[in-house]
Image (tube, rainbow, N blue to C red; front, side, top):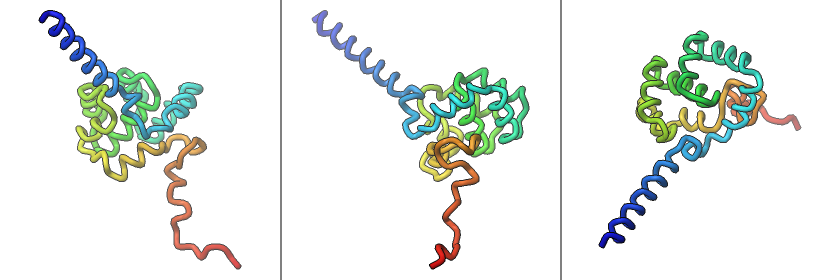
Length: 155
């Protein structure tokens, strides 16, 4: 009887650990394949990265430092700024939701901010970043190339 209860407890602990591990940002990020290279680039030149954030999101150093007080990786900071922009919310609210939803994945955070995880805007964020034009993926200014109504090749 005691062994049976202990075994049930061990199984429950294992299930909880698996659920917690599978909800981690690294596992949950799935489609965010650009993040690793983005982090390498940003960490190679932190001042350039911060300047790019300031220019792209029209924020100051204080707001950037506030975000970095809650995240470790540059890509995470970028995603928070993008989600705030998409939801049209102040960064304080985005950080508040980030802390509440930490470890549940970007889709859960997006949903808590009023962004549909299935929206084209969120899918775009999963596939690419727009801070570094020369990185893998399609940057913001290049994503519409080839979709115009041009005449095509001359014969």
